[in-house]
Amino acid sequence: MLVSREARDRDTHARGSLPGKRTKRVAEHGMAHGSSCRMLDSKAEALVAHKEMAPAAAAAATMLLLLVALLAAPTAVAGGEKIPTLVFILAGQSNMGGRGGATVGGKWDGYVPPQCAPSPRTLRLSPALQWEEAREPLHAGVDVGNVLGVGPGMPFAHAVLRSAGVPKGSVVGLVPCAQGGTPIANWSRGTDLYDRMVTRARAAVAGTGGRGRLAAMLWFQGETDTIRREDALAYAGRMEAMVRDVRRDLGVPDLLVIQVGIATGQGKFVDLVRKAQRAVRVPNLRYVDAKGLPIANDYTHLTTQAQVRLGAMLAEAYLATLH
Image 1 (cartoon, rainbow, N blue to C red):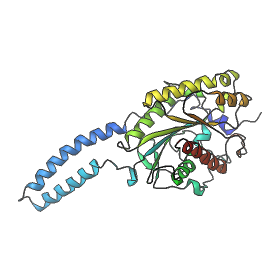
Image 2: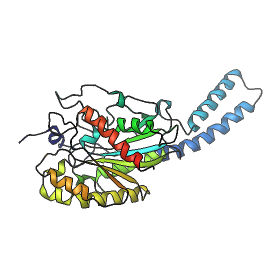
Image 3: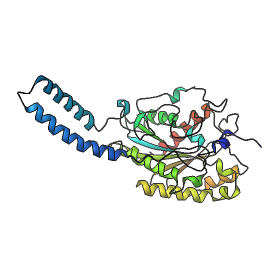
Image 4: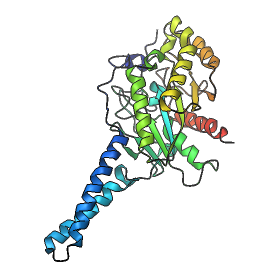
């Protein structure tokens, strides 16, 4: 029996445990800044209005006003990038987290295809819940305990932004949430992974200052559920429940979900899981199939070029819903 890197991923984090929950929300951060800005603004204006103030005090007041402007700016994110207008959740296990170029020698080869290059119009939500310029590995600091490489998120964003189907000037915000080696049971409501995903999605939308919307959830998971027959048979019901819960908890009852059909698995019930994935019945769900895409020599993970192709397929599925 071949043991894949995906199987080795199922260690400390295989049951969805995380190093710690981050409870600081972008929305709360913004509210705190708002009240602080008003207090600073009043003090600074009072200083500037005093005509006989000393030069040093005048300089201090000017600096204080500059600080007020920086704190009050609703579009400020790490590095000064733009604010996302289209926000996408990326969730599932290792093939969503990205192992392209990271299946040999225990490290990533560092190759970044042009379709995955950084762009000012493609941001990611960092582990600290801040928007920053996205770059590979996209899931760095999120898919913990694993060697990360190229995934489908960056080529997806590039393909979406190249399309005439999205408004001119759109900015894509990617919200990495995947964790390698996890069964779908670890993504049910109330688990660490589910709670982290919902927290990150809420923070992502709040961090747009009302300018962005949650456009879709991209879901690539199921390889671990091929190990046990009972998990394979329960897959469709668990997926349907998770989608319903996510939509309710995020307040987006018609949230688009694009599910990727698995191409490989860690067990012998791959066909059962694939059948279950196609049997999922919830409104506004689209299905793309990873079967046939190039697989790395660990027999589980997509290659870098396969991830580029998958990103384009996911973009095609998303853009088709806009017509």
